[in-house]
Image 1 (cartoon, rainbow, N blue to C red):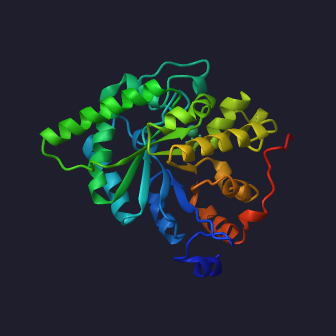
Image 2: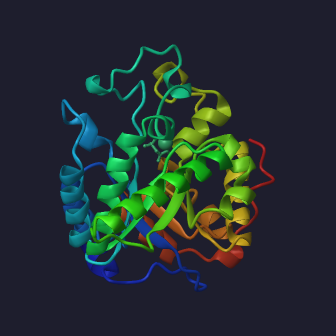
Image 3: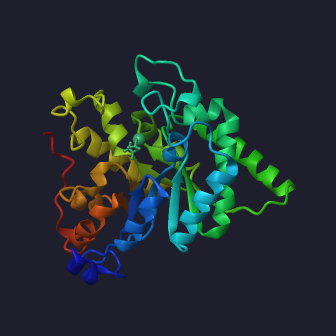
Length: 305
Ligand code: PEP
Ligand code: MG
């Protein structure tokens, strides 16, 4: 492993025939940033912010969140850090949210649905993220998007946050990139329209598989049925990538499938711009990219397994 690191350190992720791709890391805590740096990732493609909420017995304040996001931005020293806004739900509960028990938590009150109905929680997090953007290259990403109307509402709230920070003379990143997770079939099917409204996409293959195949990703009895390689998923990723590129935005993958070395060729062949994987998977993925010849890849979309 040390040898692999020495071999790859500081090198671009480029295929044999010259196609470049960004390799970023997924993290669930600032404590993970050490291993991100050790494995020489190009950035953080998914910073799951839930831990800030789950670790505590009350809502994290703006200052608490700001300190954490600022530290992440500074530690990454100008490399991109994509912070995903709160993705809590009936499965990942924090008692102080006072959420009802739900029959179908995966289909329930979670993620952006909480943020758009409890605006104060959302605004506190957005203020912290936009403020921290001054200390590095932060991007913000919204989870569980299904509609253009949600994007419209998010934009209104972001505009309010920016106006408030401006009138309070608090510095913030005015040009921050804003992207969305593509992790519902609805988002895939309207990805042509969504692409015109945001700066980037990141495909969450874990939830996209769950919602497309109607399989609860947390039910171990269904493990043999849960299949992220299903042609439906591969076609959806290709469709989303085409729509992203048509609109001139970039697309990444931050679900587990991004780290699957059997899929690297396919992702490169459809022009995926960024793969975000857990820190331990970075070096093997980078090695794989450098061994690939995109020109030789056969089309896998015809597969019906
Ligand atoms: C996903 O759904 O693929 C994803 C990356 O998000 P999470 O696993 O946190 O739901
Ligand atoms: Mg998800």
